[in-house]
Image 1 (cartoon, helix red, strand yellow):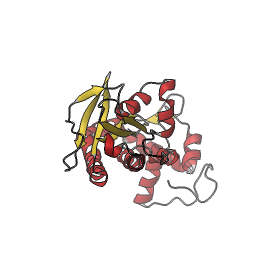
Image 2 (cartoon, one colour; image 1 turned 60 degrees about the vertical axis):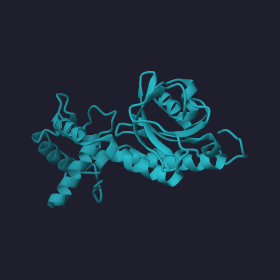
Image 3 (tube, helix red, strand yellow; image 1 turned 30 degrees about the vertical axis):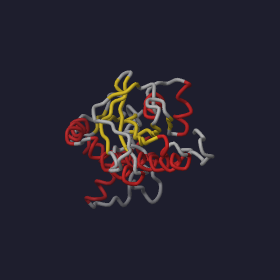
Length: 261
C-alpha cells in the first residue's frame, strides 16, 4: 500500500508523483481500503487508511467514479461502484475451484501416500467435488460426485463447524482441523481442514483419508494435519482469502500408539 512521507491527512500534497504506476498503486490502495463490512467510507477515513493526502484522494476518487469503480453518496461518503461486480462476474466464470484445489490434492496425495479430497456441504450431505488417489493397492477410494452424511467424518466436522454456529463446532473453529477414526467406515481414518474465500467464507474442506491401520497412527495423523494446514493456507490465498489465519492453528501433538486426537 502506498503511503506519503509525512502529514498523510493534510489537505494538499506538495509533491504528488505523476508516474502512471504510482497513480495505479494509489487507486488500488483506495479500493483496498474497503473491508468486507464497509458499506461506505468518508474522505477523511480513506485518507487515514491509505496514508494519502486528501487532495490526492479526491482526484483519484473522481477518476474512479468516472470509471464506475466508486460512487459518491448523497451524504458525501464514498462506496464501491458497479464496475467491480462486472469484473467479479467475469472472474467467476473463468475461475474453477479445480484450478486451485487439484494441484494441491495431487501434492498431498503424493506426499502422504493417501487419498486427498475436497468436500463442500449440500444440506445434510457432504459432496466430493475433487479427489486424487494414490497408486498404492490399499487405499480409500471415493468418487467425484459421491456424497456422505455431513454428521460423520472429519470433513463433515469441518463443514458443520463453519456453517453451523453452535457450541459443538467451537473446538474445530479454534484449532482449524478435525479428525475421524472409523466413523463413516470402520477401517478408515481421516483428517480435514477448512479452506476460506475472499470474504472469509468457507469454500470447502480439504481432506486426507487412509486405512485406519496406517493413517490412524498418531505420528501419521500429526503429519497429515500439518500438511493439510499448509495446503489450506495456500488454497485460501489462491481464492483471495487471508492465509494469515492459519498461523494461529494449533497442530496436534504426537501421542502413544492408539491415541485419538
